[in-house]
Length: 258
Image (cartoon, rainbow, N blue to C red; front, side, top):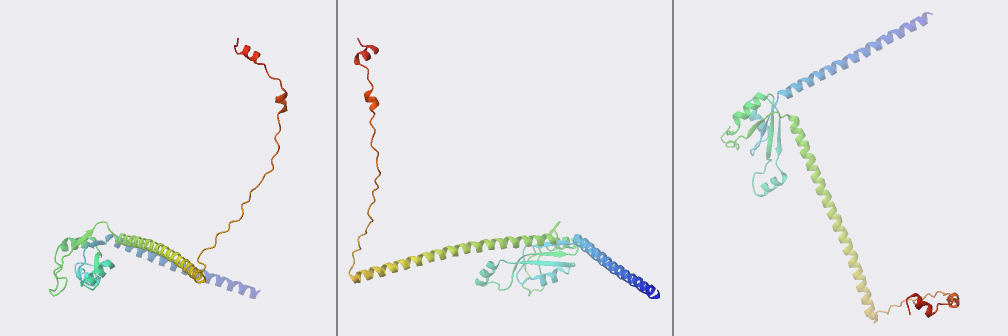
């Protein structure tokens, strides 16, 4: 009896410990979810307060590091994206002896606050970049504009859309090139077969000339088969011959003869 009671007590203790552990795990999971939710809400509020400026021209010798260094003087900057120039234009420029570094066609700068982004765009647009006079961008002009109701997610969606279009065009070009290649290979194969046939014919003619049999043998046609069908004998109409006919006097009286 005592052993059974002790066993039951041990089971109760183990179940209590298991329930405590499950409670602790559930509480930890709830705390993690709560923290994640608070973090997402903070990021959402920050995203609402952020402002994006658009740069229509990026001067040479300017990259995202230097741009952040210049614009961070006016306020906190979160993200910067500079679109690289077209590779074909880059190759053409390098061949022409121009700037051999990386150039960017346009850019976007995300400020932590909309008010800062608006103030920076109004203050810098159309102004000289300045800085040190020895700098390569000293005489360049700012081309910056504040984008109202524009978020960074819109930019990422646009970039993804452009990349998808570019990939689709590339696939179309590749498929067209593959079709042209297949057509060319088929024509090459046909021409090779025709040349082989011509070579065989030339060899055959040469052998015939050497053997002295230049004249081609006459073609022998198989005899024409004429099929004959058995005909039945015609049956004479004896009934019409035995049938008496009308006399000419009767016919004349019927048709108005005198």
